[in-house]
Image 1: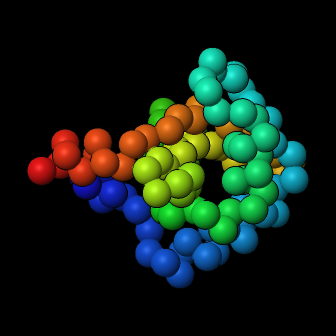
Image 2: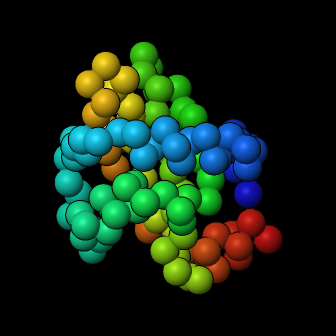
Length: 108
């Protein structure tokens, strides 16, 4: 998977899960019309045991994180977030579902 190049190792993943739990306020910058309820997004961020991987991305002057959660055996949930360290806010930039089977076919 070409987009997995920037992903971090397992020990970093555990540290990142701890960091994710420490952020108390979750804010949606915009809520796109997708068939994923807000409750699912918030639950996965508050209980990151289904977090599979994360990638740090530099976007202009800000650092964003692309989080990949396991939704089911068929789908993954991708959430792009930004951390506000001073206020302990977690800003959700966007989110979407991906189909694992479809991704594997594209990579072949």
